[in-house]
Length: 303
Image (cartoon, rainbow, N blue to C red; front, side):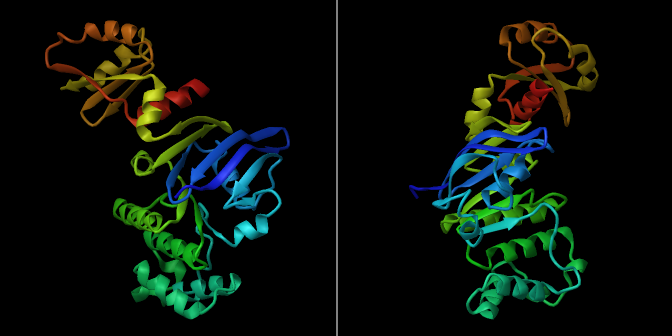
């Protein structure tokens, strides 16, 4: 795949005095899975809605699926599958009834057969007569993905699709996403889960409407300039207050039975931690910064 499914520059949206999205550039190659990350209120949903034509941008130029995202939004909508944060289908209709309605809205040819094929692919055939309102979070998510796929889109825009879903359902969902990507579909998915971000070809992180990091997971971690050390041992949790605010220490967090300590000034951080190396029952080792370390650091800078 050599083309760009999304190629926009200077994407901007204001709501009154609030600048929700501040001149963001995004270029997503066809057939890739990109993660779109950032805290609540960072502008992720607003960006996704502008890309698929549900919101008009105040500034910016570029294309989505080769179409001008500002002037050809109607044509873009017919080629995009958009999955919203909130389950947005009819809970008093069955899975099949919901999908058949969506197929009619899109004018899908051989709609009944297309619904059958989609039910089969996503493992929904046995539940097709069940009311949508009676489904668990994982099955609602699967039904919503089925509705996104009915009109054979070229691009999927998924807005926090796995929020509130159990780990097994999340894993199954991502296996399906990568299977679709292998068939040439492009996916942009917003998420708060770091393990999901690590499943993406590349990630984009926005904060307060600004793009602050992008690249592969390893590139984003390297660009952060963070150094991370791990303290392990009995009762290391109690060392967190002792470490906070010390020279070189930007972040302290407890993970399982280990204390992660990160900072940008490596020399100062090592000097601070030197006093902990000889403590009885405490092991100190350097570790690769995690994606979570990087994002917590970025949020701290924004504050």
